[in-house]
Image (cartoon, rainbow, N blue to C red; front, top):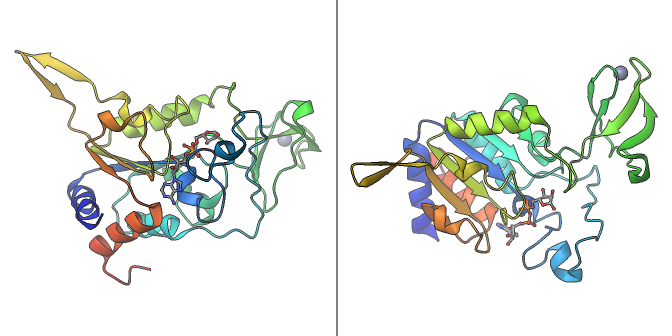
Length: 249
Ligand code: APR
Ligand code: ZN
């Protein structure tokens, strides 16, 4: 594992812009994932299980979350798109302007009328029978408040999807951290601009390196330049130690 983490650290060191796609694997030490060995759905194996990982407000970010914050502070991270709605990336202190929560955030609700976004310190109540309505009203304008979770059949909010596409397109290193890459369009984002243009019988790829850090193989492994089968904590800790020193924490 160590040599591959060293290679990843080298890639981060030399990259101009490194972007990250986060999945449930990064929060696995404290929250169940959906798929994979101990995944919520792996165990009871039917999709309609309400997989709302209960995110109580006592949860603390993992070592890997903290490692990403330290790397960002040192200027090594350009942007993070997370598929997780557990609030742990923003709670770890990752700067908001560099973070897109593609599938929403269990602590965030928005007003239908004035469109204000409220980041609460409690889990926003959800009443699915009311189509995302929380049954509560905006304190600014009285409008209906809705939760921000994106369900399978729903489209991702345009602004965050467009931002993610643009940020990944301008990155020369993209790292997937703890995702089975099973849910589109998020899963394909890191690979979407890996276009090849055939010029004079040889194809030239856009100079972007992609790395997948995950405990299990994914459907995108064949498109990745580097695959590291390890835990997010182990790998991010090793990269942070390499680039920031042993006591980065
Ligand atoms: N370190 C690294 N990888 C891990 C760890 C760990 N400690 N623990 C589990 N994994 C891997 C699992 O092997 C699995 O492949 O993390 C991956 C998590 O995959 P999923 O549970 O499918 O989570 P994710 O890819 O984020 O799911 C995407 O699906 O349910 C919807 O909207 C929900 O955002 C979620 C989306
Ligand atoms: Zn309002």
